[in-house]
Length: 369
Image (tube, rainbow, N blue to C red; front, side, top):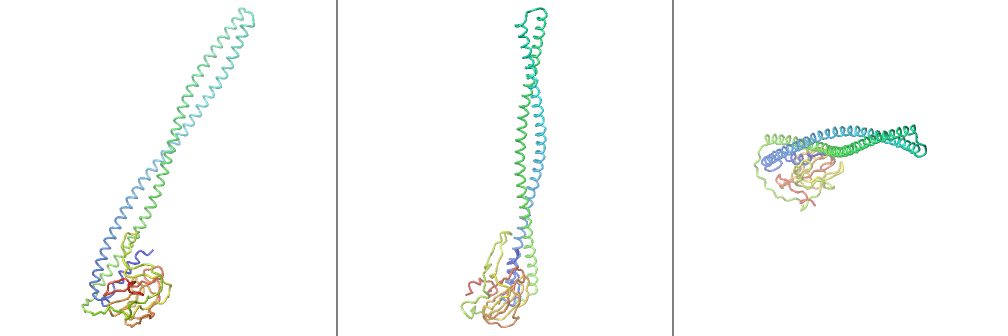
């Protein structure tokens, strides 16, 4: 993208020898002041962009630290989750063992009770039977005591299991929360990274504009230093050969006359003419009669042609691929004077066309048919 396209046109064309335009030195001094003002504005824009980039970079670094903390916490929670799950499984295994023991004791106790019942009601009593009954009773009491102990142990294990499961659920919940937090931070970091890249690109573009403005200011100052002051008074009629001028080429206007604000660099750019989209090599015609005042390559304007209409007006034609007339030549209205192109500071075929009254740019659309 040619950010400096219109700036170069407005500045480079304004930097031609003062003999072409009345009061050229004063105009160039004014242009130099305007250029220096733009340099200050661009420096401020660079400073603000750098500050915004630094601020974004600090937030990016801070969030990167938060991301590492969240990741570390998630790993710790995952480890706790695994160990807690293992503990739950072991406790459940021990509960199952107790349940199997309870079932076995219940079976044994039932058998003892059955034996005792048979011994008491279906056999005659004797000393030997009484001894056997006592033995059965002791066995039943012992089994009952063991059963109570196992039931108590099982109850404690179930309580421990419930506590461990509650702890496990809390760990899982915290892990999910940290994962969402990590995802949010990652999304913010991605946006910040994109913004940093955007600001770096914007900074490069603004610096590019600044360097071009600085170079143009130096060139204009050099030109001012070598120009001769021309105080001659010229009586101008300000009249053309007809009420309206013909168009220099046929095409679509891609940039109009006046101020254009660049949203990317936040810089106001001045276009001293109009820019017309054209096909490469199309004929450029003189809009009215006049004398060629300039016909050669000039900085960002590329192959530049200027016609002095000797009535107080000058017409300017930039970015031509070739020039068909030379300085001092007399040209007629509708005469082909150049071929369109994309020379100078443009990236496509275009004709930059200006009309100046006493050296000051005016809107060409007010003069063209």
